[in-house]
Amino acid sequence: MSSQTSTSAHGSSSLGETSRQHLRVGWWSLLLFLTLGIVLETLSGFKVGFYLDVTNSTRRLMWTLAHTHGTLLSILNIVFALSVRQVPSWKETTRTLASRCLLGALALMPLGFFLGGVRIYGGDPGLGILLVPPGAFLLFLAVFLTARAAGPSAD
Image (cartoon, rainbow, N blue to C red; front, side, top):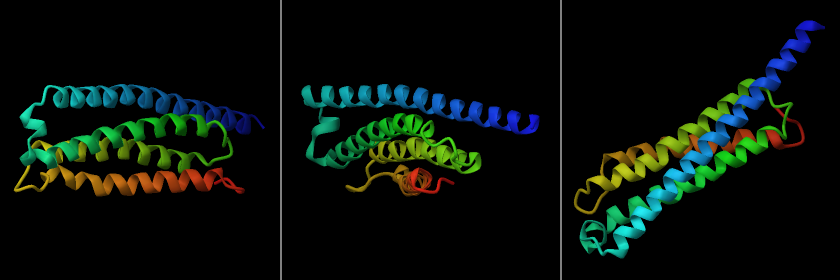
């Protein structure tokens, strides 16, 4: 009985840690990506050629996508933090995998778009864009695992 109690307490503790981690990461990354949005608006407002010239439309698109995906994924981390507490029966290993996938997506997707816009090659994004597909896969996996856990028979 005491081993069940300690396992339950450990699971609950881990659940709380996961929730707090995603709340913390979500809010700080939201601040970061909202700041990026303000910087982009400033570049646009001051009509900075490095950002607005027609030859830099790929850069503008990539950086806008970095801001948008970063903001969305930040909010998704906050939603994940709140969701984790609603599914206490979610197996810790699966929950941890979903958590790591979501954090990986938050790092890879916006970074890939941003780096893709740093250096443009004949209208094409730079090599940083190669980070986006693995990030998208991690996002897909995180959402799939979370949706499955929130379903009728939690994992």
